[in-house]
View: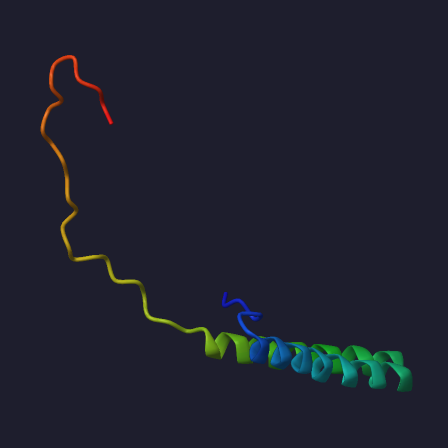
Length: 81
């Protein structure tokens, strides 16, 4: 998951998104409790759909380079580093 607070702009967008998510739920709950539950379920479904759409990525490709390996034996009586 991407860090939502990587800079000031994304932190501000995160706060605005949170307010936009919670405000309709609160207003609907003041009208009627069941209406608040319905708005919560719909808003959550929309948010989950948006996050899932934005995070699709291709599978990671394995590295093609060769690793450097030091396979020379240590000197007799020498230290292993």
